[in-house]
Length: 142
Image (tube, one colour):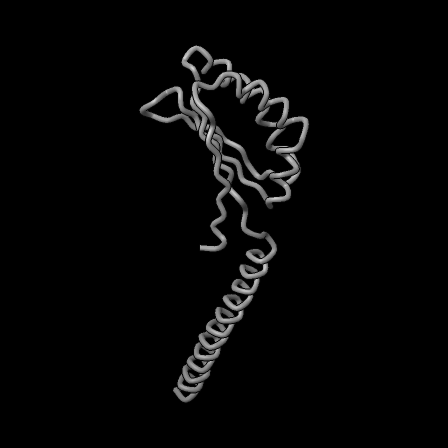
């Protein structure tokens, strides 16, 4: 029986070592995961959101939708643009919002000065029932 008792004590000691090693490994992994998260967060600066509200004459709604879909991929591919989408008001179907995400104010301004923007805007603004409203939003300072 002495051999069995020695095995049992050694086995329990190994279990304690494994438990300690597992706990230490968990702490190390968590440390590195936090470091990776901080690195990623700091590598991608906060984005700006451009929100544009447009109210169209009812007879021009379909034409605007066509213009948007014909150009959205070009806008999304513009340097600094992370995404662009179109949403429609549920209560007033002639009101639309474009929501785009930009890396920086400089990128947004470069787009607004581009031939792409000038061409799309020239075709779009003549379809309005009222003047468009626009906001540039930044949540990094909240």
